[in-house]
Image (cartoon, rainbow, N blue to C red; front, side, top):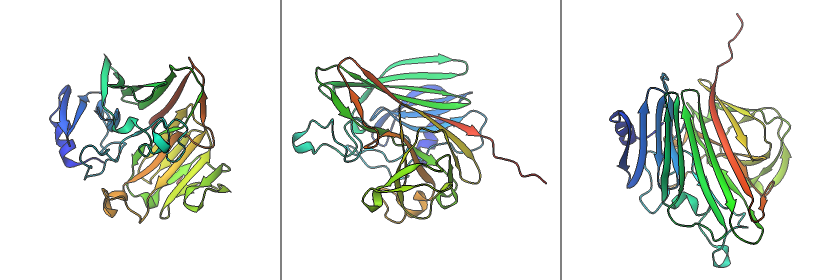
Length: 298
């Protein structure tokens, strides 16, 4: 579910091209394997729809994106090299750097586009250094069956660093109130809305109003909104964040628009921060694929 203006750009794309949208430079693809839109601000995937699908796509983007230098709400923003208030890698005075880190508002360059009949692979890196000791790069793979995103961090400095981060996926749903997230039964969680109080998930995760929980889990999940089952796998992460604002809406999102997304994020949080030593790398990844909806026996 994407804004009409972005839909028009994709409909006017044959093959691959770059175009301006909402003040940002985008890389667009409309191929037989599917559609893909990536913003070079933040190396942010905004849209993916596999070929042959009648659905609008797997990702949601607000219909009223913030102007520059703000970040676009939706798609898969990169939270790097820190997530929320876990600012171990924040080098700013008094650790007052931007919320969710520096990557999502930075300019990135497209280093390589590897094409083949079944899909595409993109490689991106920041135009300017984002940290004195950490160097990120992004790999995006898309084809008719799946969307895969990797955020790779290399330690190029001299002292160990603790970092956190997230692939803040805004997943498109028919109605957030009808969603169920399968695969977290029995997982320990921290409830950010209630002072990080600890609990244990009983059954599937439903959405009844606002939710902001960090689940201690590296399991593959399924998001079922009653119309589509989206399978969510991940790499390099032992935290899964499930977030929806409920009635406390962001300024750039209406209640009607907010009803059509749920965030299910591969993350490294206070539950599983990453300590990198000089020369080491860490890969945080997420993979989306469509799961068939279970049939009901007559």
